[in-house]
Length: 209
Image 1 (cartoon, helix red, strand yellow):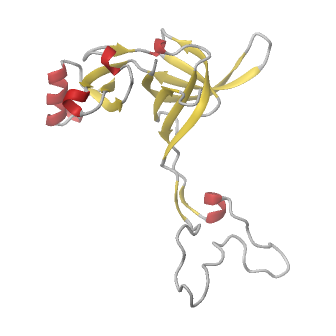
Image 2 (spheres, helix red, strand yellow):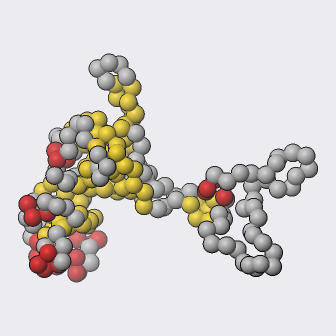
Image 3 (cartoon, one colour):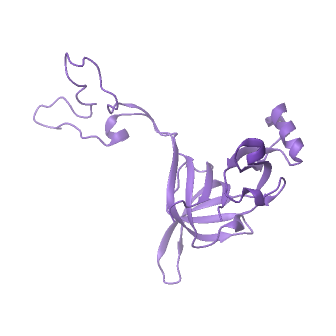
């Protein structure tokens, strides 16, 4: 069965197993999310559910979205996301999906927006090799050769150049669920996940498991 939920990254910590091993974990506050819309092949051409996460104040929601929530009969939500699930037909508008859909030992894929690192050079951005630091060299962390002179008289596509780094959608696959706290809506995920503290995350069961 396909499973998916939205969550917020709270930060990292570590827990100990019964054998005394230390496991680094990321604490994610996952759900509950409310089904706001149900899409079907007949009406939309595909099966999916749209879910809302985190209650919102009325002043933060525009009129079209207020009508959307009113039609669904649900509370106003700050975040809307759509999940294409094979078992989408099993859900109905108003259903609440909580963290208990996942269990300890599950394999999951976590998607988030990576941390922004501003304008970065090629060494930091792509891991390119730097020039010699001694023997009179005046070239250290530059972008390197821009290509041939008269032919083709331009910089080739895919040349590694300085630029904006981070703030991109990143998915980390095949992470382990170490623990699920249903009462506090928490998932403890082994290892690191994308984004800063407080960042939005999408958690799905792994496609490669």
